Image 1 (cartoon, rainbow, N blue to C red):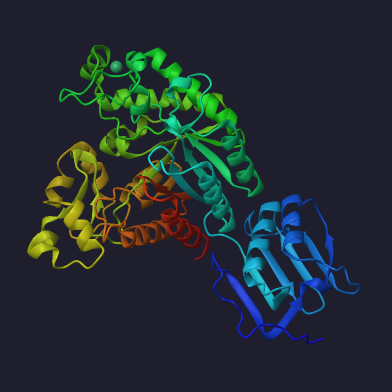
Image 2 (tube, rainbow, N blue to C red):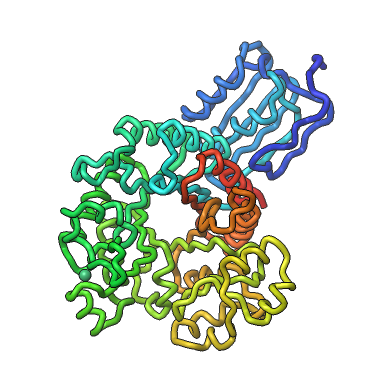
Amino acid sequence: MNKKTPFTVVNTHILPEVRECDLEQEKYADMADFSLEIHGEFPKGSTLLKKLFAFREKEGYPFIVEKWEDAPSEEGYCWEITEEKVILKVASDRAFLHACRTLKQFRNGSFIPCGKVEDYPQISMRGFHTNLASCRQFEGDEVRSLLEKAGKFILNTFLMEYNERFPFESHPAISSCNAFTREDVCSFEKICEENAIEIIPLVQCLGHNAHINRLPEYGKYFEPDHPDGRKSAQLCPLNEESFTLFTTLAKEIMEAHPNGKYLHLGGDEARSMGMCPKCADFVQKYGAGQLFVDYINKCAAFARSCGRIPIIWDDMLSRHPELIDKLDKDIVIMVWDYWTTSDPSPITVFRPAERGIVIDKSMAEDGFAKLEQPEKLIAETFARAEDFEALAASNEGSCLFRKYLGEKFPAYCTAFPFVDLYKEKGFTVIGAPTTLGNTVDDIYGLPNFMRFRKNIFAYAQKCKKYFLTGMITTSWYDFAPEILETGLICTANDLWTE
Ligand SMILES: [Zn+2]
C-alpha cells in the first residue's frame, strides 16, 4: 500500500514512557482505512478511540479490540499494527483509555507507526494531591484542567483536600467565600469518572483545622490556644462532639465523591496533644502517643463503617514509633518526605526524639562541601547537623528505627527508611513526595524544582524496589496552578516505567 505519510521520524517522546516498543522503520498504518471490531464491554475506551480517529470502515482492514486475558496488570494493553490489520488487547476499560492516550501521542494525522507495543505500569496506585485551601488560586476550571491532565498522563488517583473550599450544607459557615460550588464538585467527580481516576477525600480528623476554629462558635470543639497566643488548629480527641463534627464533614465529602475505596484522615502535625484538662489527664496517665493512637483507631473504625479503607499521614507515628504496634493494621500509612533526593541519602527525615531533617555532623563540616546540588541547598536550608550515632541511640523510638538506616550510616542513610519499618510491621504504605512543599528554598522567585524532581524520582524508585502499593505526589502553597503540571508529569512517568 505504502501511502505517502507525513512522517520523517517516529515520535519517541511518549509520556509516560512505553515499556516495550518495537516499531517498524518507515511503515505506517492509516487509521482512516480501518473498520472497528470491539469484542467486549469497553465503553470509555471505545468512545475515546472513536474520537481520536475517523474510521471509514473500509472492508478488509480490521481493527480488532479484545480482552487481554493474561495481562500482567489490570491497566495493561498491547497492540500489533500492520498496514492492513490492528489487534489491540486491553486488560480493562481503563487500560483501553491508556492505549488510546498512547496512540494519540504516536499519531501524526491519521497515521500510526506499524509495530508492536506492550505496556503496563510498575506501580498500581499512581496519584497526585492538591490542598485546595493552600493552593487558593485554583478556580473550578483550573481544578478541572489539572484532573484532565492527570488522566491524560495516566495517573489513576487524586487525593482531594478541600478544607474550607468545600460547599458544606451541614456547616455552611465553614465554607469560605471562594468555596467551590456544588456544580464544581460534581464536575470534578465526573471528570475523574470519565478518566478512570479514583478520588480519595482527605478530611482532617485532628490537627490542621484552623479554617474551622477561625469561627468563634466552633471554639468549643478545639484544644485551648497555645501558650504563646497562637490559635489552636486541633480538634479535641476526647470530645465526642468534636468527633461528630469531623464525621459529619467527612460524610458530606464522601457523598460527593462516592466511588472511592479510601478515606484519608489526615492526622499529621497534631501539635496540641494533651492541652485541655481532660486530655492532659489522659496524657499524664498514658502518654500523648497513646492518646493519638486511640483516637486514630476510632476514626479508622468510622472510615470502615463507611466502607472505606483509612489512610493517615505518618509523622505523628514516626515521632512515637514504639506505638506502631498499637495501631490497627488495616490503616494505610502515607509517608511524606520532601527532602530525600538520592539513595543512600545524606539527608534524613528523622522524627523520633522530636527531630526533623537531620544530617550527620561529619557531612556538615566545611559548609557541606561533600554535597552537590540540590542536596547542598537542601542541607543549608533545612537540615540540622547532629551526632547521628548518638541521636539514633537516644530513646526507645530512635533505637527501634536504627536498623533501617543502612550500612553507610551515619554519613548516609537508606532513603525513606520509615517505609521499611512500617512494611516490616505489616502495614500497607503509600509514598508521598512533593512537587510544591515547604517552599522556603525558592530560586529566582520560583520553587526549587530540582529538589522536587529528584524527590519524586527517588521516591518512585523506592516504591518499585519495595513493592509499595502506590505513591501520591503532594502539592501545597499558593502559586499559579500551572506550576504543578511538570510535577504531575514526573509522577506519572516515574511510576509507570521501570
Ligand atoms: Zn482535649
